[in-house]
Length: 248
Picture: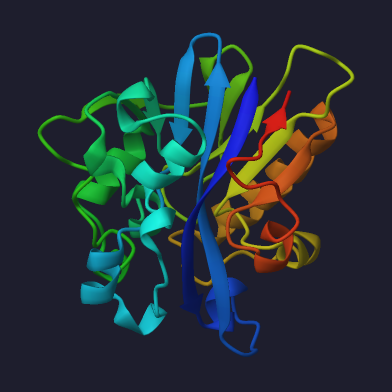
């Protein structure tokens, strides 16, 4: 398998959103998607944010995204086109993870609880679920629940709290000498947050969030996996970005 990280740009959030109730200066955070070349097809996990939508609805997050950082352009950088993707998986349906979904009329795996919540969310979740373009006529949703193997070696682990139906991703190679990759997505935003056990400020169930932090740690320990963070600028600077890739 080959794993590519597709750079989708960046946003600015309050530090209390980065880590719940922990004060500090505003911080610019990355947004990226995960592309997996697999024997069973080309799998895309999340699609980043849409610049036009974010500027219109969340301008206070000061989005930065070049044309080269859009999902179609990033796929091209990795050597593919939108038409090459065979399966789309969403960790959850917040605006900064679904902005490019509109480009795909393919199998779209998402937690059944997340699908229902995003369509009928609580008022305080408005900004999170403000981009509805994921729910387009061509979308072919496969609603799942529980831990779920999307394809051999691609495992989704239920990690709710940030949202009702949040998933984290374990990419586990067949070779025992290669370390698996565990994408926590939005269970925690940064390495320091994981170490301190502090979830993001935006969440629907803080008790579930605490348990999911523990679960991410347990899954990483059980499988000997390295944890990757969705919104950690310092960590992201050390990751390989497309056209570079990880080979598992």
